[in-house]
Structures are given as structure tokens and as C-alpha cells.
Image (cartoon, rainbow, N blue to C red):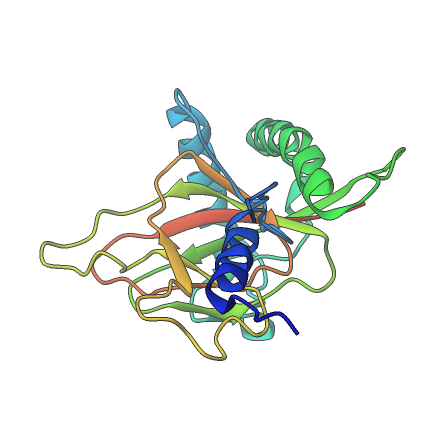
Length: 226
């Protein structure tokens, strides 16, 4: 029997292993959380009228904050967009414009075949918050899409933490907090400003961090079903 040259055999094996090359690579984001922030210019008159309306409603209507995710503050009924004031109609138009831009992207990111002939139903409510009022972490289970428009945002006192008064969003993936890597982001905060409009999936958990100082923060929150 002829002797086997083990070195030659090993070299051939090594050459075979080295022939492996990358053919293709795909790095994708699965199950995205589609989020929208829109800022408006020239809305001083609109915001002033909405602020006057919300302060009047706080005095004249029932405060349902105790039946919501709010602790403290004023929370109107969820029929805000059915009111006849011109400022309400103008805000509804802004919200509808935002939804018209957001929803197709939301559907494209969540549906393997985006549905057609959808009929959107929109409803909203106003919230007045003062120093120390809280909106605790929650979702909106009766909607597909949610959002908020900021009417009035009082400046924070000197020395305030950057997160005071911010809206906070929590990583919506159920197991993302299971075994976190160092410095993993699990919460995102966004500091509101007048004229800012935010739209997000209704399942995206969020909360409002309390602020200090004088003034009233006024916003109009909304839901949309389709």
C-alpha cells in the first residue's frame, strides 16, 4: 500500500475551506415602529384660540382625568373634534393631513399586502397639565394609530432636567428588556413644543414626565381606527 502524504491532504483541505466566499448579505429591520414628528409654522393664532378654548372647557365641562391615564390635570371627553369652533376644524385638518401622510407608511411597514378602501374614524380629546401632573405609561387598545398636537408648552425653569415635561416612548418589543446589552436604548424622550404633532402606532407605550414651574401645558390627543 502506498504511503499517504498527510501534508498534501491537509493543504488540499485548507484550500477547499478558503474557497468559501460571501455570496450575499441582507441586514433588515423587522417589525418597525413607524413614528412621525411634524412641526408647523405660523400657528400662533390657531394655538391661542385652542388655548382659550381648552381653558374655558376646563371650567365649564366635566373633568374625566380620574378615568384615564392622567393623574391630575384636566381631561376632556373624547368628542373634541365634533365641536363647531373654527379652530377645532382647522386643527382637525392638520391632523388629517398628518394621518394621510403617516398611514400609508404605517401600513407598508406592518402589512405584507397593504389593505385598500380603508375608512378612517378619528376622535380626540384635550388635556391641560400643570406642574406635577402625570400621564402614566399606557397604550390605546381601542385604536390603530394615535397622536398628539401641542398647543401650549410652558418653558422649564432654570436647572430643570432635560426630560422634565417630555413625552416618553418605551421599546414596544415584549422581550427587548429580557437581557439587555450595555447602553441599550429602551426609552426615547421627546421634548414637546407648540405646533408639534406626533403620530405613532397605538400599541407604542408612552407616558408624560412631570414638569415643574408655572404655566399650563395644553395638548390635543387623538386616535384613529381604520
